Image 1 (cartoon, rainbow, N blue to C red):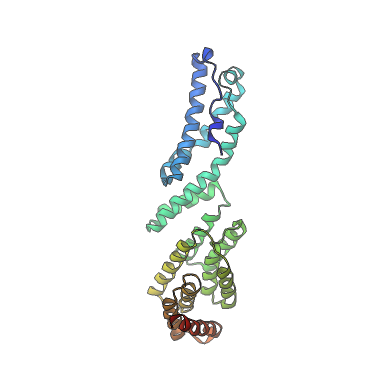
Image 2 (cartoon, rainbow, N blue to C red):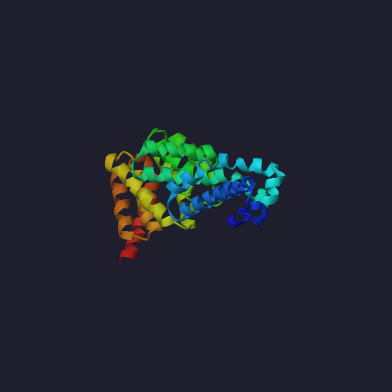
Length: 275
């Protein structure tokens, strides 16, 4: 997107010294600069400044409508108001993404109240934010203790994914949690077939999340299988995969025979890699 398109294409200097026209030009340049600086801040890793720059900008951009109706000012500034309108329409999506990133930062730092406030802002600006539904699912599961609600959030994320694949990891986890092992493993096979940018970070987050659960509560031994599977299929770390598959087999219950068979098969294969 060419931000320069919204800046004045030309200014009539003979008229520019009229106070009215000068104010109009300054206002538009100020708003445009605020938008550009906000985007630059976001891209350079400062979503907090970006959000501060943008959060009230939609209302401020309404000012251009008054300018657009004044033919004298339009003749002085010669703005591309259609382009400016495009920016206004695009802002809610940008603000939603900024709010999501801030929410995620607070979540990582265990500041859940602040995180939820910004997650709410993300949805207010864009009710169809894919990443925000992924984060919402974590809160549904972790804070609300409502796995079915979390699964609904992931299903919504899936509909909005547009080729993105992070949702698959959350879906597989929730199916393991629900003891729907056949469906969980079906998703595992799909995860095996797919790769995407940033997947290594997602896998690390998934492993950390599951291990934290198991450190507190071992009533879901199927999560050991899930961890072993990721070490085996995605990370190619066969000693670690073997370790977690063996823990799973030692702790598995009667209704987990489907996973036990898979784990034994993987274990026999890890021995080949270790030798």
